[in-house]
Length: 362
Image (cartoon, rainbow, N blue to C red):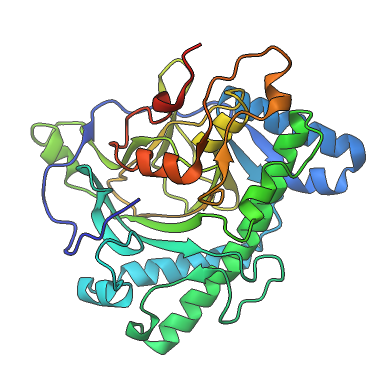
């Protein structure tokens, strides 16, 4: 969750990391085109690769995804144009009526627990309308607040682009979720996907902008010779089932490996990156692990990323699925609703272990 923070990316103390993370040597990669067109064997191989990546890293890259390259480029350009607007224009364009609403434009403040980052963003709600039909009209799946405050030419172009993008990416995300279920050997391949496709699915879209910070060495390195790096978005796991990220060609994304070490992820603007979320960790009884990740600021180039967060309905009960526990097996997590977990997660700071409050004791 985010809270609206009016004002520019003002000069206040930001978290810094002083050691550069080495690149991830071998990013797990899954070719969806091969899964779709490779017959039974090709699909089974893709499902195994997805499951292995989710078990090892909770993270992987998706190629052959079927989302048009032209759409990706247009969304990136439109997002960059929005963030280049004057501050007052951005705030007016994406203001919301309710001060407590998490949706709209915000900068610097991440949540309401004191977390800060060198980032500005749009957080938008996603509804089920139009997701399966590709209808990008007034009932398309993005709820963009306060549209009357947005110039009509910008509003229609950006809103329609984001609607089209969301439809395509959610469809792709659900294909990935089906492969996850198949890789686990589950009887129903839509066991995870149907939660995201549900008409009450609590899903979101976030568009992030990390401006370059050329002065960061002076700010955090103790002078011109320092090597401090500014945190754009602090380390955390995503609460939802799945997150699907696409960025421009600027680096910055880092993930934590099982041993606690951090590695940087080479950018690939033609591909998507998938994160396992906390909810999926629970559903799989810990077999898939949500990935801890962060974004560090580039000192030269802006980073723009768009993330789809696929969540279950608020009243959905989350618990390890029986067929993934096995007869006589131990359930690592108690039952709880998504609404309950979301409320608990957003009361904590980003870096905290949110799932520990829902683990079983025996």
